[in-house]
Length: 632
Image: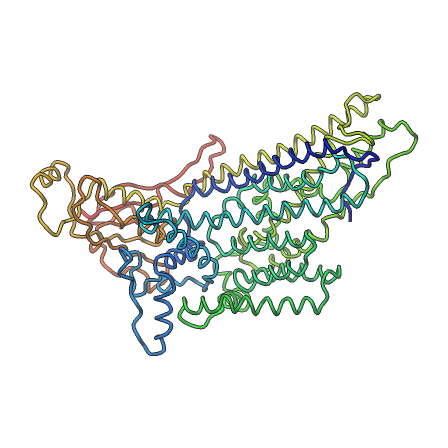
């Protein structure tokens, strides 16, 4: 299977090769920067997290501030019935967790257990960074929101490098086939670079990959590794591809097993791997993955555990995922993929037809002075079919699971983007065709009006392709702006902290100076012996994190009245019965709740949420979602 390559008889000159190489490098770096920029914009715009990523985010907090020590001691003495270790004295404020154990997952375990492997790596990097930076210059642990940003930034950079690696692999893959097909002009030799750059641009224009590249979801870790697997596949390294897929399946997402099956079957059919090689690679990688992850997970969970096996059992054998909603069989194709790709989905079919090449050949005929006709190709282009078919099989198999979410098919998006990039590169070749023996595109001064019309139509279609990418990026920016309003719980905690800093003075252990007492009376500042905040389920699921809790409790007095840093407690409710708050609301000084009115409390502020786009007036509409209440 070979991609379309314009014919040529003239080799490139050294000067032209040098100039083209410089321009190619600059354009490549620009496309890489745009992908990085869109990811950073999403990270900056939406710094909070929702319930889907709460496990890994809370685990990153616990591993950064508490490490493995408490879990190891608890695991070691668990058989003897010893007490769980409490928070380390060197860590300021253990109020972020309201349990004997310093770990959030011991009180809020979630529906199924998840691995700590990914966040252990990220938190270790952040911890190392805090050790490298002298505390006299900057004390990183005392700035929890910066720690959270740093950990998410690490994941973002790892994800970005994976897509850059895939783009380079595409350039190498198409470059090998282009060079083996015929002698090229320098202009035609840039086709692989064009495909690589379009992949980066199309990926950057979409919403989900840049937005979720910094989200601590198991799906994000899986997408990162699957992208590397695709890169190795295009580099003609099938064993490394299998290693990445097995590793991802065993540690991060058991559903990647479906992709492993379809890609593995394709490799066996194409004889890229033998059955013995496939079995050996799978067994060795699987054993290594378990040896790497099971000890860490068993220590953190306090029992021997392989998390992804329990997830697989929950979803497949017990089929309990349906309790969280079901979708029709065709939902991934009819809803998820169009939403994930937007208008760039229209470019995918162009990767499998040779219509652009036919148009280009038709335009090029007028440039032949001989009677020889260009060689015609078949109607279909099968260059990417061996790569695209198993990804479609993955989506097909996943469609049988009733519970569906778009993040479940994140591993398919890079391959769809590869096809879209190849389709866009064909429009590029049609709009700027190369004639035989020339280094410049075909001019529009053809001898016949028909050829001029075809070229103008081709360039018009190319502009439509560029427009689809631009419109997709515009739509993605709107999605990012909408997503900003999806975290009212996190915003409410920030506003509460601001309220405490500017309007509330804690009751000091020693009498205040008379001047401060007079100032407090004039400002009508409330005084509390302590602050006890209750966070209900709605607030906890929409942006409240342990980093935010630590940030809120770290310093609540303004810079003018630094008298006393008293106790600051935060109690969270969960959907589990044992985590529902059984205390009277009057024991709390402040509430973050979805209830607008609670007896004995007055409202400080309401935080909007539940955004939707009003297309008629082109504005974002919200409604009050979380209320900050203070005891009378």
